Amino acid sequence: MNTSNIKSFKSEDAVSEVIGYSLLLAILVVSVAFTVVLSYPELAYMKESSYDEIASQSLSVFASKNSMAAFGMSPSQLTRIELNGATLIARNDSNNWIKIEVINSSGYSLVILNQSFGSVDYKFGDTLISYEGGGLFRKYHSNDSLMISPPQFHYNGETLTLPLIIVNNSVSTGGKGVVNIYSKSANLPVTIYPNLTSDQKLVNPLSNKQIKIRLKSDYYKAWKKYIEERTEADTLVNDVTHEVVVSLNSKTSDEFSNLVMPIEIMGMNYTNTTPLNKFAFDLRNVDNNLNMIMRAPDPDSDDFILQIQKRGGMGTTGVDITVTYMDESWKSETEALIWGSNATIDLLNVSSMAYYISSTASTTWLNETPPFNGTYDNAGNDGPVNLSVIIQHYMKKLSEDGSFSLYVGEKTPVKWMGFTESGSSYVLDYDIKPPRLTYLHIVQHDVDIGFS
Image (cartoon, rainbow, N blue to C red; front, side, top):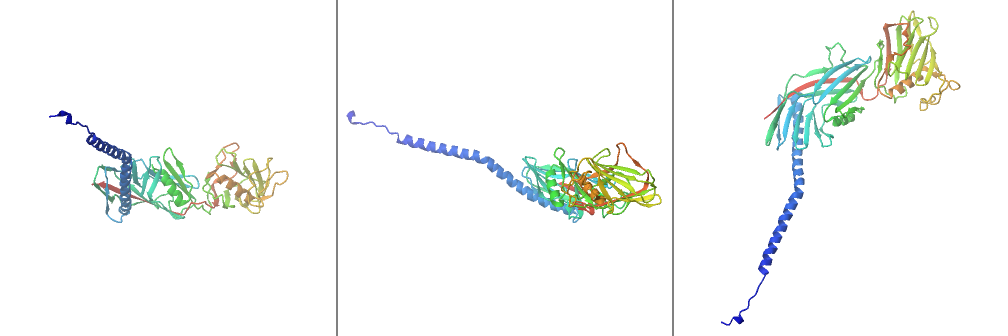
């Protein structure tokens, strides 16, 4: 054989094709892996959001059914919820609570309710949804909270109704699958207010009282927003203790009542140009030494001083009334209606005139209702100004900082003499700023929660 006619050759086509497929497969694998890595958080978020939405809907149904059981509309109620790895806890502890005080015009305070709400908590990952007080709430990473459905807190501008739903027991469950939530009334409803058996006059309509409601909750910000929207009240919050406080004021009495010091002025409507309707004292066993000095907002304060002092002998020669607010002082010589040794002194007497006696010119009258919107001094424009206008003006100024009291002055001189306090009376009737309260109804409903 002639080997010179044999040709050898070398081809890389097959190898190139294999390498190409390998590279393509590698790119595909890397792309899929990269896509999975990038999309996994989003997929996980979508999954968690889906579970959240399902849980919110199921718990909203539970909130409605639990109210039905609590109010005795049915013996028991059943709600089903898909856990999907979440935990569900019903508890009755001190983590959240409501405290309600009734404060009367003399400053006496009575706590009529101090009770834990209890709660039913759903927790999945970073999601926390809770049922408390008849409402449904959600909490976020920032500790901000959102109300999903409203609690049992009803106010219509005159009547406050609080059907308190209390989770009465503690139980928990977790895992996957469907859980049945059973709700049933635990006890007969208990009427907290009105209470006709109490010796504290816890009756309707309310008169000359303040109702102070204090709530502690992880969802206090949502409670605050809801209460403000429903009542138009200004609330106070404590971000450290997670508390929110709201006060509602009832109409003051327009009748004379026993003179008990201090005299508390709560929720006066200082936006009204003449908030006072009546302000008078009916004193017993008055003699020539009559001298009453009252201070506000504290017993030793010089911010506001009201002095009532007998002038001259007995009879109709009357009394001197001096009103001091900061550096501004006025004096009025007015007649008291004297019957024997008793005297009625009307601080809104339209016939009594007052004169400015301070050495420093006034500054608080510049925005007052005309014609009193000027500067007063004892060298020129010293009045006269009606005593009623003086009292109205300075009581409004004090009310701008909130509630305050008229105290028997503890500073020297105290000067609380010349009459018998026992048997004496007073009337202080004034316009109340919103939210006003005439009727109050509080009923406690306990419910037991079970899981299966």
